[in-house]
Each structure stands twice: as C-alpha cells, then as structure tokens.
Amino acid sequence: MSKPQNKEGFSSALTIFFATLGSAIGLGNIWKFPYLTGVNGGAAFIIIYLGFVLILGIPLMLAEFYIGRSTGSNPIGAFDKIKDSKWPKANKIFKVSGVFTMITSMFVMFYYSAVAGWVYSYLFKAIKGDFNVLATMNVSDAVNFTKTSFTQTVSDGKVAVFWQFVVLLIVTIVLAKGVQKGIEKVTSTLMPVLLVLIVVCDVRALMLSKAGEGISFLMKPDFSKVSTDMILTAMGLAFFKLAIAMGVLIVFSGYYKKDTNLIGISFKVAISDVVISIMAGLAIFPVVFEFGLNPSEGAGLLFQSIPLSFAKLPMGNILLIAFFLLTAIAATTAMISLSEVPVRFLSQQFNISRKLSVIISTSIMFLIGALTVHPSSIFGGVRIFNKNLFDFFDFTTSNVLIPITGLLTAIFVGYVINKKSFVNEITNEGALAKYKGFVNFVLFSLKVLCPILIILIFISSFK
Ligand code: PHE
Image (cartoon, rainbow, N blue to C red; front, side, top):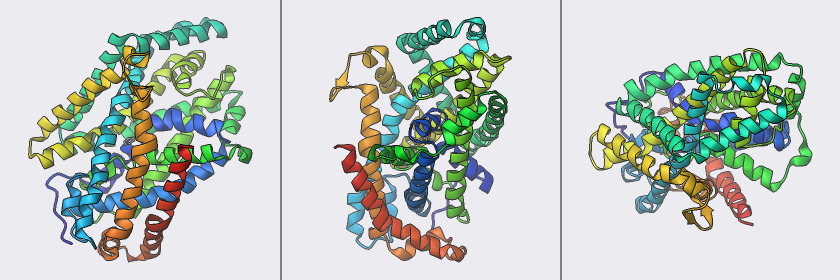
C-alpha cells in the first residue's frame, strides 16, 4: 500500500522516541506505578506488569502504529483509508473504536488536567517556599499542615480552576506551534530534563538511612499478593502507561518516518517507561520511610507525604522543587500527546486550521474539565451513575472504553487486515525481515492472547 507522505512529521529517530516516550511518561509513573507496586507485592507486581507489557502492550502498540503510519490519519479517518482489509465493509464497524479513542482522550483530559493543575500549584508553592515551615514542625503537626494544604487546593474552586487553566493554556500554546516546532521541540527538551531531575532525587533518596526499607517495599517480591484484582490492576496500568487505546499512538505514528523501526520504538518506549517508574519509586519510598509515613496512599502520597518528608530533609525545598518540576513535566508531555488526538481529528476531518482545532479542543477540555473537578462537583453536585464526574470519567475510560477499544483494535488488525499488509508495514516493506518471528508472535497475540485476556479481565472487573 502506498504511504501518504506527511507534510508535517517528526524529524528524526530521536525526536520520534522522545515524543512517544512523552506520551507514556506521565502522572502514572510518579504516583500510580510506585504505590501500586508497593501495595501489590513489589517485584511480583512488576513481573506481571512486564508480562502484560510484552504480551499485550507491545502488540497493541504495533497494531496502532500500523493503523496510524499506513494511513497518516486520525483514529476515525484511518478506517476509511485502510484499503488492505479482507472485508472492507467491516472497516465501518471498527470505526467505532476510533470514536471511542476520541471520547477516551477527552474524558481522560477532563480529570488529568485537573490533577496536573494541582501539581503545578504545588510546584508554585514549593518555589514560594510554602513548605519550608514543615522542616521544624513535629511529624503530627506537619501531617495536619499538609492535609489542610491539600484540601484547600482541591476545595478552593478558584485556585483549582485557575491552575487547570494554566495547564491547558500551556498545552494550547505548544500544540498551536505545530508538530515539529511544538510537540517535538518541547518533548525532546523536557524528557532529558526529567531524567536529570529524577536522578538527582534518586541520589538524594538513596543516601538516606531508610533507603533499604524503601527499596525492599518496592522491589521485594511477595507472590502471596497475586490475585485477580492485582492482575486486573497490572493490565489496566500497562494500557494507561503505554497510552494504548487512546488514539495517541495512531496519531503520533502518522508523524513517524517510513523507515522508523516500529518494533524498536515500542520496546525502547516500554522499557524506558518502566525504568522511569522504578526510579520514581526509588526517589519516593526511602524518603517516605525515613519519616515513618504511610507508603500506600494514592493522591495522599503525592500531595501530602512527599511535601512533608522532602521538606524535612536538609535543603529539602530544592529537592521538592525538583520533584514537582519533574512531575509537572511528566504530566505536561502526556497531556500534549493526549490533546493532539482531537486536534488531529478536527483539522483532518473538518479541514479546519490546526490553530482553530487546538482552540476548540482545549476549550472543551477546559469547560467540561473545570466542571468535572470543581469542588462543587467533586464534593456532591453533579453525579452520573451515582459517581461524581471525576470518578465517572475515570471509571468509564479505564474499565469500559479502554478495554473495549483494545479488544476491537486487536481483532481488527489480527483478523480483518491482510496479514501481508501488517507484516510489510511493521518490517518496513521487508527491510526488517529479521523480525519476522517476532511479528508472527505479535499477530498471534492480536488474534488470540489479547482477545482472551481482555475479555476475561473485563468480565472479572464487573464481578
Ligand atoms: N501514560 C500517561 C501516564 O502514565 C497517561 C497517558 C495516557 C498519556 C494516555 C497519554 C495517553 O500518566
């Protein structure tokens, strides 16, 4: 199949890697992965997680790369462009998965941008030195202080909405600049900065006396924790981390080059992502244990235990700034990729300018997003299916839309697409023929493993 050349695409193998890594790295690495690993049996969880990355994650990434790069299109339009289908009529049915990715990317942005707003506001507080008082407080006063500070951030509507606005404004500016001058430039500048910051935090944390306790909380395998729920969590996390089923990989691979090694990119991104997650855990737990705090909290870990424990270290405020800066970077690059999905869709399908598409997309994200996380919604107010909007958007995306889209993508590429077309695309028309064996495994996974595992896990999530 002849490949449409993209007028605007990423310019080099390195920037392709950084941009894609930017979509994988996000809040998931900093607070989800570390605490989920800690409470779910350490290395036991990491092993199962890696299993999902290999047998489902990478094959699904490659399936999305196929759809994206072979068409250069957005997740909905792509289904009209794919010609190598055994039953061309089926394309129309599978288009629904493209619609789901669009909904998912928006739904996730509604609440993700809010949490990112809290991170930005914490970064600002750290820069102002608001947490310096913690250094001399006793632990129980400090716990109260950080608790109050977090409640205030979340429950003061003006503050929360202001920071969400700032976050979305930054995303708007980056996206409006375009693929090369915006997305590519920002991700390839920020990803290395993030790495440096996390190394700084790691070095400091690992010098502490409780480093060993922190490391063993994260790494010591406890296989007694293996359960259906834990397996479910590991799969959900693998999808969320690798930005699967959200349209991001379809859109981004449309900006790849014809000779980009897709298998190489998927492995490099998946491995770097896990490494960064583990490094985040190593930066967090030694410090949290040093002050005897609870390592198993979700939002509490990020917004309460971390400010408290970091601020208590000598020069802790600098460390805290580094930590929230790296978290803000991670969240921002993830949001840039996520928001590019509706932008690409609007500009391609309705033939409107990129700038206008960006403004429409981020304005909707802001209007509904602000409503979603406004304290009046979170603490009562609007409810759908007895959930506040934040939980509703989180639940429908993680538990319903993402598994269904993953399943449809696997079936579409596994069964509907001509095998030859897929193999040609993934091996760059045979130039990477040495990977043939792996490509066969990928096809087996898309045909058999993905459908079976996703359906089993999907059903058990509703038990
Ligand atoms: N992978 C990101 C994280 O871990 C979230 C994300 C999901 C980003 C989907 C883009 C698309 O936080």
